Amino acid sequence: MSLDTLETLRDWLIADQRDLELQDFSEAEVLCGDWTPLVARAKALLQDYEGRLGIHGPFWGLSLANPDFEMRALVARRMLQGLEVCEALGASQMVIHSPYTTWDHNNLDNYPGARGRVVALVRETLAEAVRRAEEIGVTLVIENIEDRDTDARCLLADSFDSPAVAVSVDTGHAHYAHDATGAPPVDYFIRRAGERLRHVHLQDADGYADRHWGIGQGTINWPSVFDAVAPLEGRARLILELRDHGQILSSARWLAEQGLAR
Image (cartoon, rainbow, N blue to C red; front, side, top):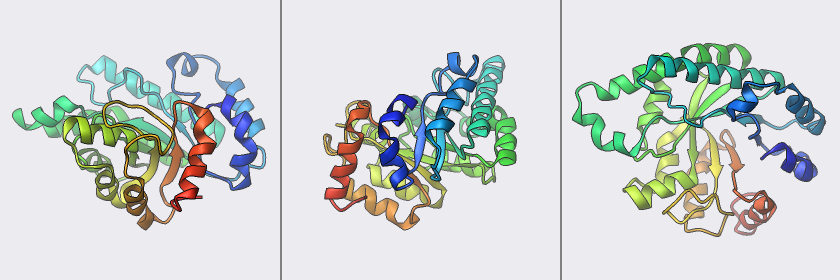
């Protein structure tokens, strides 16, 4: 949620020390400006908060596997800027986006060495950020975006051999990939991530677009999702990422009424 939404939901959040992901720090205009007043505002709102805090890192136009070396340098700088915010906030997790596209799924095996090249480019882009994340106790979680393959970004995370790199699943993105591009269903994305999974964006969708609807308004099979998450016993943070922040409480209630969450 944003800081504006946090102001209205602060009591609900703190009552059960729920996981929180702040989304005010993903824009270049924020990261390249003076973001310290935003951090001060967050800290004031989060007095008495003892839950797990994270941020959504920068992502607009930023491919971790950009083949242009100058663009990779820019992406690397944005990742470090996000980590500066994490350190100032005391956040322990930052969401970043998978580099894998729908085109990649159909073409990576069409070009010799293409799979390894994607991994090599991402490792170069994130090398300094991973070192810094290890130093300050932050985990970078790689979120599925266009991914049709449940495993590619999991293997990418494994390649760093670092506790500072893990995996995220966005339920709406996975549902879109399933219905629109032939990917496995949402629960498969979660099960295949296994112990690498440390973060889940919960949003409902229709399988056609990235809707970010309230939970229960789309066609995702939510019992299967929560069955897949259950073996992690809370090790993955569950974050409601909805377009309409006014639906956060009603979505939480819906999940509770279904006996899936509290």
